[in-house]
Length: 588
View 1 (cartoon, rainbow, N blue to C red):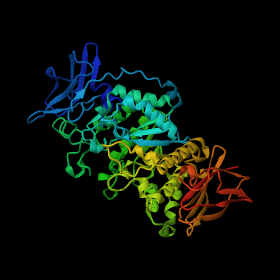
View 2: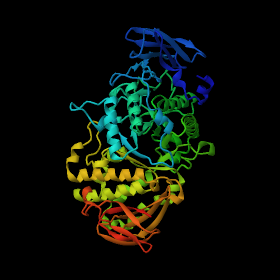
View 3: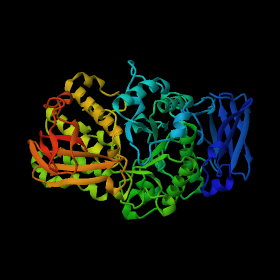
View 4: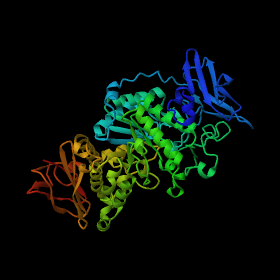
């Protein structure tokens, strides 16, 4: 490890030096604890004092007989007071909660077979990206309520994603965490895959399987804050080593500790963790949670920009893209901070895409509005088209929108049960044809009506009901059309990739636009009113082939399959749409 780079926040490989590394006959342990007066390694075999090394801020011990699978923790003696026992900040495995010791892992024990995928790389800006966001522990559960392992989930998940038309999956945080209810966002082991589902090798096998099936794999990563648990990072060496010493900025809105990004050692810790997941586990990208809390003090724009946080993000993203060309770095950011997806070398933050939370809020708000009030709210569905070229956006309907009393996406649709499905089908077509990459949380694809609960699997029995099964097949058909149609993604981030055909039918709640890319053209027309709407919209071309109509009978609609609701004639797209319906047609 380059110690100067570590101290100045330029290091991306601190985990190759720090942590527990198996060597012939034992394991070498190293830990950074500059404020401590002493550190020991605790194993089942007893307490083993470590030696100060380098500049006195690091401790090292080679322990014979300690190999992969050995549970351990550090006993850290502060300058004053009693010692405290902590898991290894750089530990590569941990015990299942409520136990919390680190576990020695051999990260070279698994051999990947995804070389073909590695040569191909993850989807880029001009490729389709349709992400299935999921929580591993509540996608499916065993009959006894237990979790499936990483390996057990691999093939069934790959089959389901392929069948359903997703070319990427994003896992909620898998770095170890103590409370199931936090979903992984209160982290204690930033380098340790959660033991809920198995070991490091098991997670590698899951990623490997998905890659061999042509599916990109992303991981939710938390770089803003960490859990308060006494065995974790908080006051690790008796001082505020990772967190702010002041509670005014040191405690997040979730009650966790904010990372002090002005410290080079903290930046090196987080950058190394990000690199670790991409390098050792072959993840194709990371979604960074709560970026606003790094950009602004306590995430509040009124309190001003946190310059150290901005510098950290720029350095980290530039370094990750240098080490992993083509990796996906997605920012969950609800602020208007400029240049989130502009390269760091050009003064931006260097993310490859940004969640468009404004689009999400406007769209769901519109769909919750009664049809009689939609004309006055008409432009909630056009506003995003004014700013979408400003950043490289990803459209999210994520886990955050189906919890805490918000209702699921389908349940948000205005009206009673039967009336929610046609609106949901039209909503998802609007999403999939809108400029930007896509992300949908598990359960949305078959019309889940119960809010997500991390303790239960998805309500798969709903597929026995025709409306839900039809909804699933509609979403799958829409997803496959998206993946196969360059008009819907090849020019996502270019102005010429989108054109309004009509956005001034307020009284009818009718919208029409064209997408272009890869030499192809697609037209989408939407009727978000509760009445049938006839239309005649100027459009160039000699013909129109209807690819999908949301009111077709197999999907739960009323129109016979294949019956086209529109045609292109005399320079106009002409037809009529059923209430709450949408049509997608390829123009020739």
